[in-house]
Image (tube, rainbow, N blue to C red):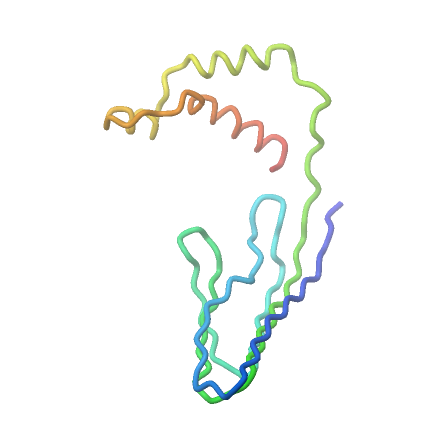
Length: 143
């Protein structure tokens, strides 16, 4: 059964004297990934500002705004509704063949990006070959 969270985050800037402008980038929007899903997000700024949004190279939503008038206080409120799915149960134990599978994966030649880096003269960590196995376990367990 999913769990739903209602989140409210307040950031308040109080200045000792009037400031002529405030320019900010805010990273408050929860990500949708894995078991977490952001159902709703609102950003409230006071004094009022025109908010522009873009996604950065890591997939985070960035909210950018400028408050050009004089003010003594700036308040930014992020409100979100987030759904979190339950994690798959972790097995009590793995098959005895699990270590054999890891050893076999480690003995296989490394492919894809690891092969490319090796051919470029860059050393690759010896555990790189088991990453697909770890990834498969993570996907199977719902992480």
